[in-house]
Length: 221
Image 1: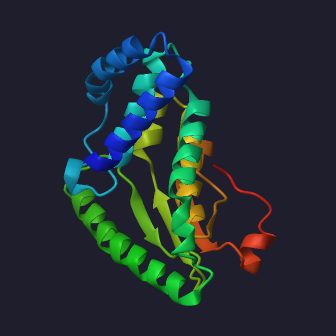
Image 2 (image 1 turned 90 degrees about the horizontal axis):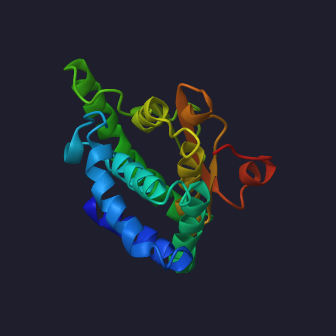
Image 3 (image 1 turned 60 degrees about the vertical axis):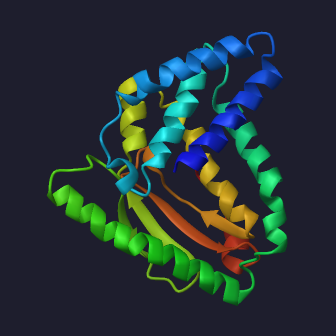
């Protein structure tokens, strides 16, 4: 998703100019030079054919600015940018609120419509020896009717981060998964991630006013 990558790049540029105005031009120049070098180290996970491949672009973009700034634009910067994006789009919550059952029904239908064929495509590609350790999908492993539930098995971002020394950044990147559901009054319930040593990351989106959301005592990134 080139548009998403461009939006995040603009956000990093704004952050750099805000926090390091005297060095901004040089940091941005270095980040631009570093991106293709860092991207060349990434595994082939299908490019545009893989609907999740843009996550690799976003991680390497963050690493480019991290390296270009001598590690000053770090995980805290990712958190600040994620909160900035939330504030920019929080108006969506006036239009979409999945505490309304019909809107949660639409969300569930749209997300499963997206991930069910993706899961089949991934298995096909992996059987052909393609797409490396891209994200495999387990649809609704909780077998629940509440909200939207799936697991992503394996993570090429974690593979890249571990191989190249960026595991300290990964939890901050994973934590951004909680931002988008908040925009529509959903809560991401998560109990394990690859970044924390599991073989998968769990995703369970429930309405934020539900008993399930209220009774859950914490989340992992």
